[in-house]
Length: 442
Image 1 (spheres, one colour):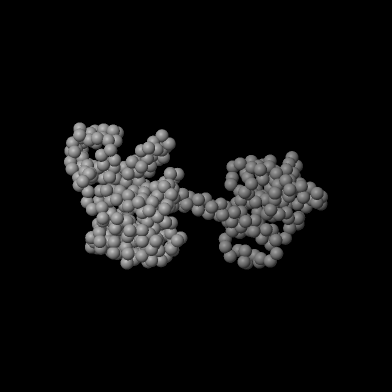
Image 2 (cartoon, rainbow, N blue to C red):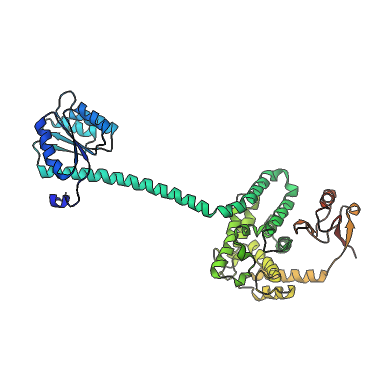
């Protein structure tokens, strides 16, 4: 071990409380004379029993105790001291020739070191200083550990405070989603209707027009089926279209009214993050996990330059590639993608021009065929029908909307006796009053 000089050892003023225990007064006096000039606080005891009493009253950093004493030997004293005050450093002072007793004292009392009588003053000073350094370093380590734990708790609380506004906005929606998950097994028939209702609630957040999500979802579902997807996978596309905007509830108000292409890099990152928030909100519901993964990949681009994971080509889930096309087709017409609104024809041209870059060519090909088929269908005739004239099998020609703009029932929905009763019950709050618009056969 490297020798440390007392001049180096005394560069920093010693601190700590020392307890000397010996039944010989001359030994105690010698220890007191040796250490008092160094600035330590000195306590003395003439026996091990007296030393234990001192320990009960005083906070002691280091004990120097003789091995051979009447009533209680040093090894027994250190055993009790180690049990009651484990952090106090212990040095055995012995002139006893029986090495077996010394080893027993070391084992029982877990002493730091032992010093043989007569001692070398410099060696004893250095042993004391090093023992105290070890004690204080251990205490400082425990203090820092406690401080780190406290700071981590404070940081957690701070993060919770920063996120509180978002949590407050999403709390009611999450509660509703949890209620949906619990009731799903007994309400399978109305599951899709429930999702549509949540979609309407989301649209109240702002930034979209009533019924927008339903249009996206309906078109996405039809494209998915046209591309040969299984019904369950196509339903994931349907649900992702309805709930694509669920993460918008946590977005700053000033971003909702800006076209996406006019946003800064940082603002776009915030918008993209809402897709990941939407995934997080839905992942706890088993029946919506597929839709959640599609919402996360909504902003991935076919050439790999999208977000958040930089997926490219076929790495992008097919349902997400479909969602990107149909959602952008609608956003181009509402002015939420580009600064200027486009016509349906112009929006279709934009989608075609960006295939292979933003959009999957495979999806765009099917999308173009879908638009041609829809254009050939033309506009269906509709007429207003009073509630008492409605019959099962009739098809809604317009959305049933509240006076505040909330879509209650979607255009294209086929009526049954339950839905007719619903229209009658809600007629006093709907925009169309005591009737609805129905598709008419030509």
